[in-house]
Image (cartoon, rainbow, N blue to C red):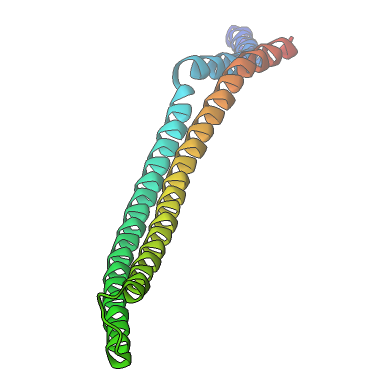
Length: 183
């Protein structure tokens, strides 16, 4: 039995030494692992973040573009209906005015009656021009909203890239600091 005890004691001491070495190496291994992950695979989370942001922004832009197209189509339909109503109202006004002139005994070809009818046409054209100007302002506002969405998306992408760049520059320093704190 005397021969086994020194061997067992030596083996236990060896295991303790290996355990102490492993305990000392573990923090270093963690730092090395984090550094390796940073250099090789940590960028995957950045790529995922970028991809998700791009997908979300593309979806937002698509929805905004579809909404803008619908709003423009609605404006166009309303403009067509308003133009039709304007022409019908003009026809009624001209017919009413001609009837008034006829009942008064004034000829439709008389200068004053012609001036009144031309005034009705001019007034109707002015209304049409104003409506078209307002519609073009509405279309410009819709287009501006789309452009603003695109600019915001570009800004968000740039901010994400800068944040990721900053993190990539800071992380090596953190890993080195942790590594040096072990000793």
